Amino acid sequence: MQEYSIEELNRLDDEALKVLDWKNLKCLNGRLLELHAEGQLGNDTFAKLPRKPILCIDQIERIDEDGIDATFTFPSDAADWAYDTNESLEMLFQDQLDQLVGFWGSRKADGIGRALSSGNCTLHQPLKFEAGKQMTFAMTRKKWVVNKATGTGTAIFDGAMLDADGEMILETKKVIVGILLPEEIHALRAKYGGELGVKAGADASTLSGLTIPVHDEGTMTVEETENGFTVNATQAINPTLWPLAYHFKGDPVVPGNFGTHGMITLLKQVAREKLGMSNPTFKSMFAKKFSGMIFEDPKQIRFELTGVTKTEEGTVVAALASLYLETSDGELMIEAPIYTFKKLTVAEA
Image (cartoon, rainbow, N blue to C red; front, side):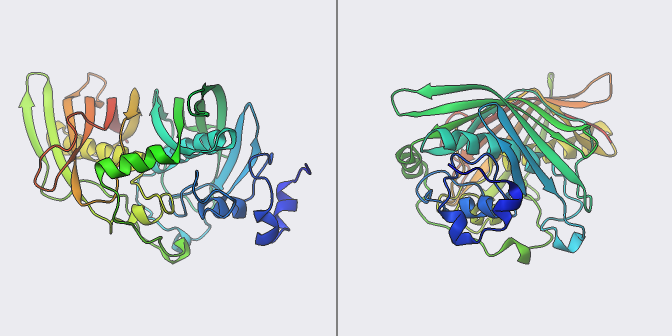
């Protein structure tokens, strides 16, 4: 098989790119990633990267058995950035780490990648829009566990985001992504409601001022207990929620890390309103686990923070953060939470 450089790939048109064996390329340019997201690389019924603007990876410079190196550069003009320039972006970029691991796994086995869990995640630098700033995603393979029964597997990586000087921005240990058979995803859709269909979104270049959905206004409740505050809030889910149009064409699902973002936003609000913090920002979480997905059927999700306290160091910590699926009337659809996060922490900026 011929090996290509990024420069050589950039000289190929779409028809030439589509016939390449993407599973064995050592690097991929941005257009190949976009074609993968559209399901045009022979992957229509299998794994797809998310479409822009959820996909924030410009190219993959190296992908092999040992890991992945990829880059992203913010546009030089804020008008070309799809999101509100004040939006906190740590979980949008955490999602890129998960996507890269899933992409790696989908080259090993035909299936659909879904993030399962990760270990400690730490933000070392503020992460907001900065015109022209380039970042590197550095992923190191720890293990690939083959599922002999299905022929798929589970990929485990350590991941990091670095700035142009090589300084750490975001670091996550033990990112775990499972590759599921398409029929397994379809069974989950049938069980938990995802049969309505969502029209794929327009070109991301037409978007501006997007914010990552969080809890609906007026739904937050706070109860003080002997172990700290317990906080609940809800967010309505329906097929018009914008991330569904861009996150996996033909297989819409709310990004799990957008749920994490919602949890962080709720903790920041409690830190300001109840614990005297003026400008809270995400610092770290000990672990996260995803055991379900948010499909497009009308319902609500409920965020629950328990054991919210302020430490002697001045940080605010939720001992446990959970996300539940509920009907629009507030009845539990599944008894257990589908997302759980441990030691979610915010600190003064």
